[in-house]
Length: 78
Image 1 (cartoon, rainbow, N blue to C red):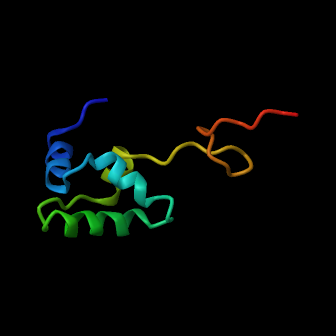
Image 2 (cartoon, rainbow, N blue to C red):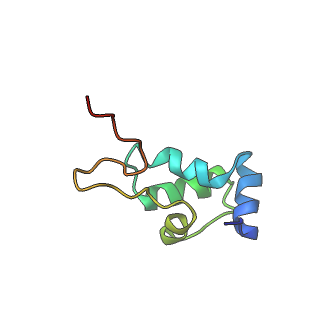
């Protein structure tokens, strides 16, 4: 999926791609609202988006029934 003009601007202002920048904050279990606020601060107030926009830009990976990340490779059975 290609970046929107707003994502490209955010990436430019951050000096790094915005998707990975957002995802790097999710393992800390920061709320989406807190990340949106941090993005606004990090871009000098130039990027102000609702938290739902960040979810669309960088959704959490799907999880399995046990709560683990479904995108991580399963350990080989011994």
